[in-house]
Image 1 (cartoon, one colour):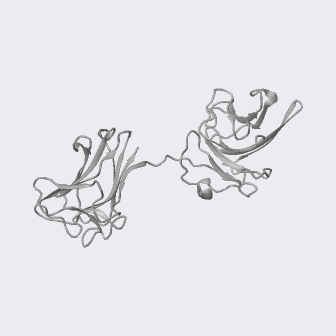
Image 2 (tube, rainbow, N blue to C red):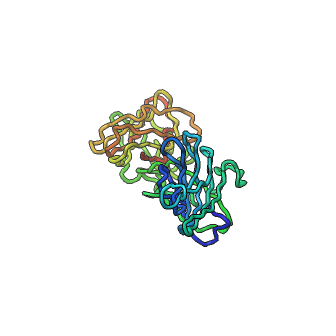
Image 3 (cartoon, rainbow, N blue to C red):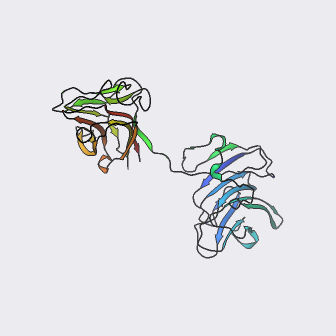
Length: 346
């Protein structure tokens, strides 16, 4: 944000603030103290402040009023000895709770006096002529999805050439962290450390394979070219009992975790089925939980997404995910196709 009176080619520092709790908090945007004050109870004060600074005697910032449960609200600034009357300047005598305000200010200190120059505009009320919703504004200079930095989020940009420009910051919950991921696209073969096998009673007519779908099942992998499937070149066989296991997934420090994958399902309903089990990799792959008991359904037309939070039994451990498939002796269909396996935290 800027102002026509700002004519020095300085960088702009955008600083989001979470809380504004005291009249005695020094605001870095103005190089002096700024407060959102009310007559009755102590803070909190305006919680969302976006500030910029040019040297120490002039500042420009965007702030949101409230919510404050009092009708006595105002924006004020001060220099020196707290908020004593000689040193305090009322920027705005009252504000609307929840509205966004643009405030600019500068000051000079003379012999025994302080002079302020301030400008304030209620952006929410459209006082600046900004009639369109800020949510529709385009991302500035590619600055979207900015990673959080501790202890303070700071972004430095070159000062735009415009005589005046307004900015808003959108805060959102960071996306989950991916701790395990496999899309099977590196090669038409089982990835390293993945395991396939068969249980007692299996006749060997079906195996888990990795490659490109062919004459049955989906027309293509969900993320081309490859996926994992029960028999890529035809329907699954009869008397089948097989499994596909992931490598070990570290959830030692996780406080929560979620399994995500895409799948195509063409499995005889009520007789043949897929299962998903959670195994303890640190205890000889002992079963920790059954995540899904029965996955079936025929005449699938497209890929679908599967998402499930892992139970507390998974946390603090190293685990594996097992995709099991069983079929009886009657009918066979295209089978189960799996893609884009991910485990995320939290």
